[in-house]
Image (cartoon, rainbow, N blue to C red; front, side, top):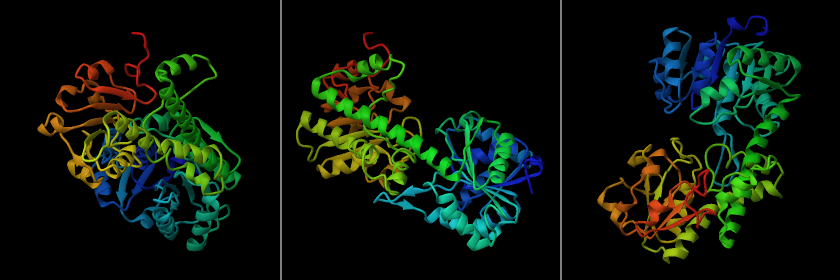
Length: 445
């Protein structure tokens, strides 16, 4: 079965209906495919079958889901093997993360692949979009497919790898515009996957020579960002020592066309940057810039807490408010958030961490071992220090007069206005930005 000859006739099973899998399924359904989404979460499955999206803050996604259900081109099930049995193209987007020791946790995807193999039909095309260490598509999951199904990848079934490369809150846009990197176990698999994505997404395509090349390319993107953020953070810490205003440095240095110094900050989070470098580190790239960058970026929480401690003294029994549980602004995602490191550091210092985040419930915050706090509540009067961790839009107009006991605001994203803070008698500090007025594009304005 060659889908490059008749792609419109194909049924696609999307395994994993999370933040990326659901947008993929919706776009495939819009662009001429019959799509069956499979997920172990019955709530996600029920939402799709009701024509609604369980993923918030993704522009255009809810409308795509509703339209696809009305057109009867999208359905969902918790029975993965059954979905695969009805499909000739299977797209796997089950997350792979790391554990507390930064070792890869394969449990979810291993189980998913074994279940996929139980329903797999001869001549099917299996595409992995999950970020994987180089070699895993063929050597781990290809072998798993063959052992369970009896079908040999590259002979009985086609096997390809095309990593997701999207940014939260703009996933639909990115899927339609970012080039799709495609590798295959052989030429037939690669060409078949390319023909599928050409119709299914309509985005530019980049064919690479092997599965391993495509796997490596995705991780390299994340390593690049992690290393460059670590460089920016190291420079910012040095700028603090010299009383140099790092936002001005960025504007001046980056005016040279070959310079692209990233913005420093209190740390990095999410499913990608703090996770995927370990896919290289665990395969032997355990010296040099890659592991060092992980240390620098994860150490920024400790650096921020030490800056506060130098200003207001020992933190034992002090109340510190963290603004933003999410790993970045205006996104509801706590995975590997620097807020979690800050909470841990504060508790180690004997402080009482409070968290405000408009995107999360009190229960969500309590589950992260911090006390939720509502802005403008009476409890704000007892806060000794504030840390901006994720710059949600709401915080751009935050009234700092509600913190009469606050001694310092640590602007972990260099986004707040220093004058709005200091006029209330509160010390302002940033990351490489202690003497500045908040990061903007007009430092002299």
